Length: 239
Length: 239
DNA sequence: CGTAAAGTTGAGGTTCGTCAATCTAGGTGG
DNA sequence: CCACCTAGATTGACGAACCTCAACTTTACG
Image (cartoon, rainbow over all chains, first blue to last red; front, side, top):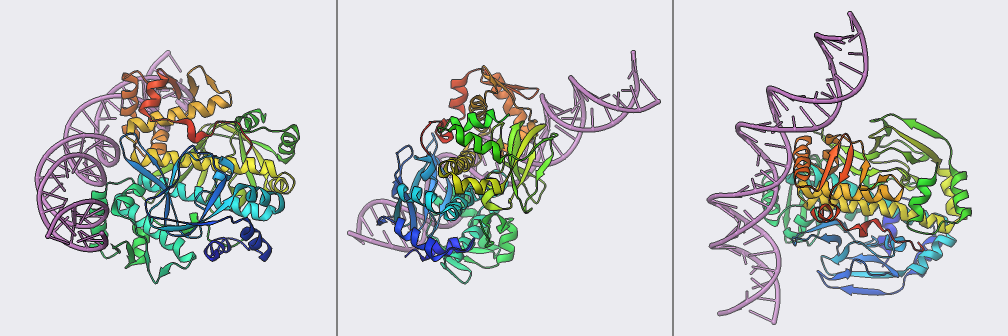
């Protein structure tokens, strides 16, 4: 059940059996949510963090005019809100974009980890820093990239992240987002996402059908998205 | 010398005298940099973090076509790269935008803190989570806001952050960035920044002259930037 | 079979970018 | 003291990328 979480951690550092056990003990309960379910509202006092076991979850903020901007996507094995451990409340919403399953981890259990296990603490600290690195890369996309590059970069990132937890099939993976969701990730309208997907399809880089991403030419897609996985910190080393 | 750093921490949590002492002991050396000096290059193995004592520092990435995107600004009292402690190398550049003074903190000293002081560890973990919150807010600006709102939101954020460390004078503060720098923060060109500044000035919200921000009408500026300081986590509480 | 959600396409508009010229202030050397 | 140089700010004309609005199609599902 937690295998994807362990795989994600082990892609970046060693994880001892004792640490694995400490994580298992910190888990509280499991829960299932439908798609488009608001899991955490901004400003609410939090006592648990949420470990995503299956599905896609997003962080987003609403704007006054009704638009929204998604700031990060989470895949199976990610903590959706590990940062709430020190923040105590969030400044944004956490919502499922597909049906998903989560495990909850009480903050008291995390505090215990900071007392007992400096290394596991640093590894979780690293995890939140990795989220920040993803935020930065999205800032690059949102601020400076064309629609074509934004979508290409997003599809590349998700391919790597899903591959780590064993959720890709060759160069394909199931994502399950609507074109409007993709627009909310990239700062585009659903209409322009649609046109851009058509262009990417017509030029033979990638297709998106029924929520499934099929990468036709990884090299050209990565080039189009100016994708460099350095920001995903894939090297395994002591943190 | 470290007073601004302590002020920044004390705005969010209690900081004991012992913890203050532990921070002082972790400091290595002080250094001065001129403006536009590249302090940290991407990919380089790091053994120190950099505490900013004075001046403005940015994190940015370059794009293939020569554009750049700044992902965060740091003000006096901030760690510019506390995240390098767990990341070990950065995926972006750290550069001064004005002349500045920094103190360096060896990662060995930070490791010692994670062993000896769980609370101070959480407080520094919180600090990196606050950086991530700022990244998210910038994603909102970059993805969905108009040029006018982007600039307004940036000026509001910096006002609050500089006020915490005592670097505002009424509703004014010295920033020292060029209009091109402001464009690199907001995903705009220097030309469009110039027009937007003129518009903000003409409508009586804020002026920007010789690097100095003078807020003429805080309420209307905050409204124009859709600014809500919730993401700066200004409440003092146990982390 | 009817409905709703999502995807697709066209026409026209807006915001912001590009390119280029001009202006200003500060610094330097003759 | 002044000519010159440079970085930065300012302005205008024009163009491109993306948005808005609206209609229509497709798919899933009760």
